[in-house]
Length: 59
Image (cartoon, rainbow, N blue to C red; front, side):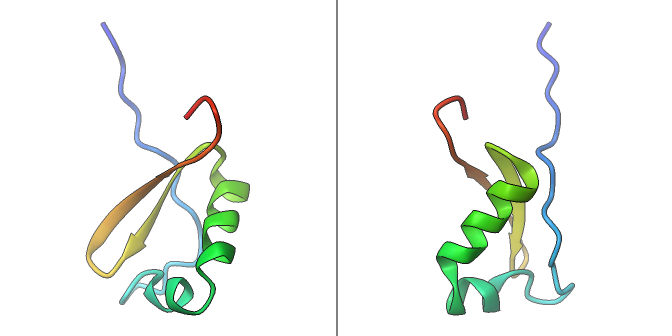
């Protein structure tokens, strides 16, 4: 049986719009930070949606 785990969440969620402002002003920086904090699979929030970022060859 396969076990499913939730991806790690990054820091920096402002509690309101999530990372929308950061995505608007520095989208590459946001993606880099999520990868640095979470690894190949990481989660961040845009408005009321959870977004999973997959990076790297093994993701």
